[in-house]
Length: 191
Length: 158
Image (tube, rainbow over all chains, first blue to last red; front, top):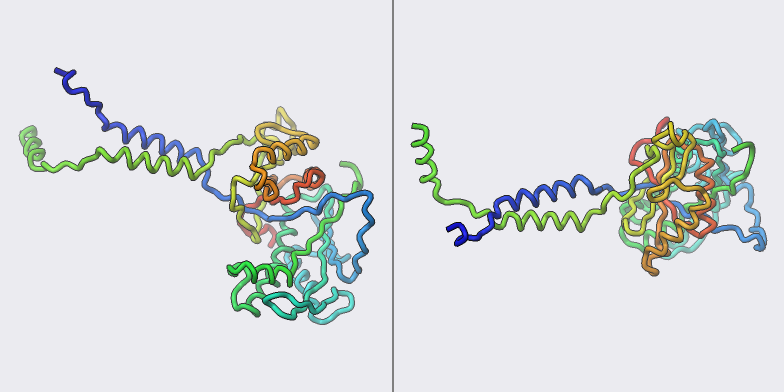
């Protein structure tokens, strides 16, 4: 009699599928990787002529030593003030002759804007902690983002990070370049 | 008495919900998760507490990202406390980075190779020496597009 009705009970099928579902939910990662994006400089060609020297007034030197102390333009600095110092230097509102040159440039969608020639030079020691390094990188990026936001708000009425038009984003990027240069590592002291 | 009451109930609730399609719905959910998520493919051998940062960007296309882990070995009684590099599932030396980059490039279609990002997941306690060495190695093989992986959060000491 039982053979007459060879139907498989599918009631537990849902339970099995649920088990699999829970397994995949647990073992998979949904988190998106976040971080600070940087472009490394290309490797140096030993035969290439040395690049033209950058004028000293255009360079904002940030040095982090092995004890995580900051030296900003030759003076002992503090991470809490780094952002303001960087902005002040790059913008050079007072036309200080020790601060970077500003020049008028024509940029699409922006028209004539003043572009700062300032470059941030970040130097670190082999003994600097990674956390401090990231903190400094973060503050420098924050300074540039602040300047970009201000310019974007002035010209387009929205913050830079809320811009959606790719042309406008490129325009702002050209006007306020992310000019952070990292020094070639120097082997000083023991590893 | 109890039996009787029970019987009465079952006769009353005569309409049953058909659950035959329930497995199908669950399977659909299952396939959705299988397709949209990626498996955690590496087990970490190094401590990896990422530093916080505020100016962070998301890495949108996960298929273009390769990871380099640096930190103190978890089993420090075996491997010591000196920070080590982990590539895929093994500890690696500095000179293995070039071949790792090449292998990762080969694993991607040719059109996507210039867009590849090497994300460095580095423990916050690590010293910059080893990080600088890794960056120099990456530069030598023209893997210039990098990401310092961080968590979202206020920087300490701010």
